[in-house]
Length: 135
Image 1 (cartoon, rainbow, N blue to C red):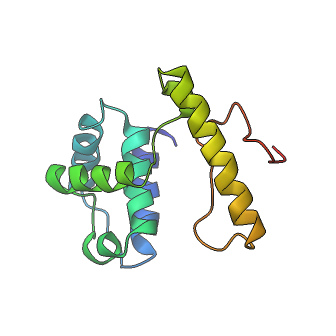
Image 2: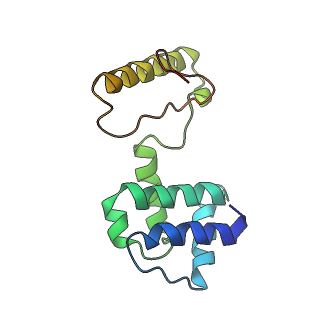
């Protein structure tokens, strides 16, 4: 992403999958306000918005431009509730982190035995592959 212009384009493209997206001057302000809700991290704000527009029918129907601050905070709640935006390496308790790795490996084996039906499985700890994976 190339700064604010790249952020506007990514959000416009995600909205355009469901609606006619017409960029106005308020888009930049809306994206900067969203970024302010996540520690001025524009890239994370765009990731949350794009994820919600691709994964949640409610947001696909209702978002026609960058969300208001209140709407973005609700989107952020959906994003966190889905388990996005964290890594096992951020878990301070080493025993809990190991349990999460084992659980992830078990879930991946379960999915592979059943043909991978359901949502794509992503191991949140990119530095280590779960047991039984080929990564």
